[in-house]
Image (cartoon, rainbow, N blue to C red; front, top):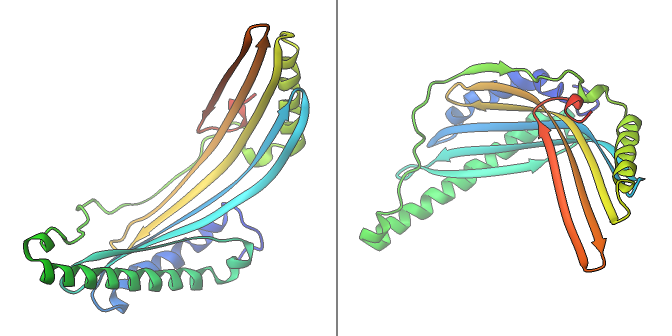
Length: 239
């Protein structure tokens, strides 16, 4: 298991997560379905105000979500979601199993509550229906990100220098500009979706976005204006 969180974690755990999820409903009574979503992002963001550095940072995001459908007379859902980090990598499989168990417990409790309400409230209770998923074609696939400049290859100092330069240019456009804010974000995201139906889909994409906010002030008042641009591509979107 890698010592650092990156989008490369997902390919390394993909098969094990699929095996866990695909076999889970068979291990629990009245469990009808389970799925797991894992999302990891890594990227950089830089901000400048009035031609001066505000901050620049490089970080990651790591989270997962679990859904389980279970119940004897009524099928109901249970959900669990968590934000995790580097310390969770060595025991990720264990964390996912714990989340599945918690979601299963919630689904069973949900189903029992609905079943009791159906019996108690008659016609009104009949409005509590089973949760059934629409039939779909089960897919096992992978998509790759598109980027001329990989966000991971962009030095943080370059991003900081870029927004500072843009902010300084905006400041110097007109003496009426009292304040400006310029930010740039570039990151990679990778998502994994696996289900007990057999779905196993890995999706990767880049996201880059730039934002500018301006306050102009004159004798009769002030005006605020902002704009932003971005796309599912690399740093080339910004520069």
